[in-house]
Length: 38
Image (cartoon, rainbow, N blue to C red):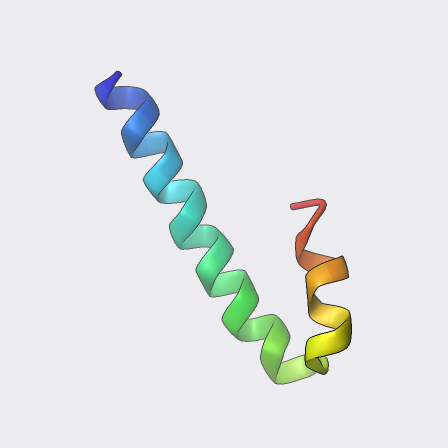
């Protein structure tokens, strides 16, 4: 369970970083489409 929580936290962290970078490059209408498959 601890491993799953850590894994989840890392995925969320990664997700947030990608979102920040993507917002810089794309407008809000598009960036969700880019994030979703990750």
